[in-house]
Length: 459
Image 1 (cartoon, rainbow, N blue to C red):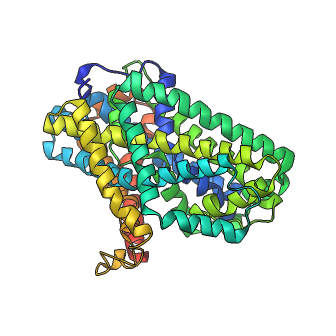
Image 2 (image 1 turned 90 degrees about the vertical axis):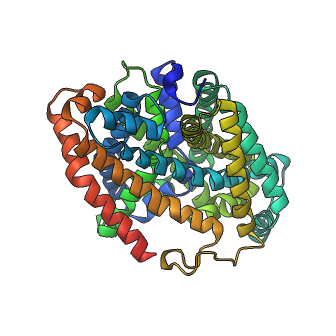
Image 3 (image 1 turned 45 degrees about the vertical axis):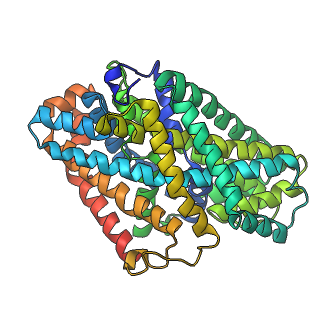
């Protein structure tokens, strides 16, 4: 198969597409960030705001990317160029796709490093290293990993090898077959952990933390957080979903598929909260977010609980599934662009993609330990105090993603003809289409511009 969809490869089923798209959207941020944000920002009051943002902003953008991909039937920039040519717009709009692919490459370079952490901790949990661990031991274990560039490089290499072996087989035999294993494994481990939380954890405290509504905490900042979480969680602006759309058969409903992706993505994040926080509260641990929750706080619970060795291993299998499925989507978008623009065979394009991401990942690895006080872009206010790892994350999440989503909404909302939109979305010119068109043209662009500006100023 070549990198573009001119090869004729498509998803074999709607279920296969949904698993791949949800696998791409569901990342470790769903597991270590969303539940904490939910609890700290009003519980179900925040959930209501989040769902409103996901459906009003995330859904129209997701529909846009999938429609562009299926209409253009090429990679990210090629599909945009094709749609632009069909509608009489400048082919320079294709650069928006290239921007998204660059963003995906940047994220891939450090996300694979993070994925390696989950492999390391799975082995630690399975081998019994977490049994009876105390707070000092947990912090020392985490610090030791961050200051072991050789160990981090080994795991990063393993992740890249896995990516190469999967996506070299193409869409159906590679990505689709992989997510049919990874995503059920993710859901199964989540449900197992939730059941354990009901039996051995403090589910009442977790329910109160996650769902008790507190509308007094819903402020303008809360809405901005919800918009950011919805936008980033779905994976808009990276070009990968355009590529996924290019593999969609014509009889797949884009609006229904996009809605299912968003609801499943949100469902995974909620399940993660019910899996994690009953243990946190049962063992009197700190409710934190990010890497501290996953790699320092939860190991304490696994070290104390009956069967902690087993359930710790199960939990890190969950993280591995979420991490690898996201990496596959990121890499596929870049590989598609490489094959399309540099006329490179798929296998060579994959080698180039994972090789370049692996090399850039070395810089992130070094910045976690020996270079942790090296701030290469300190002269730029928005990047002040950022390590290489932090700078790459800020560039992708706070600038490139939002900019890509902003430009896509302008292109498809204003430059593409009404008939092309209706034909590709497969909807009638009625209430739903009017809502989508109004949001993508008049609401989403200014909102993304405000979020982008505030993110740069507040940083």
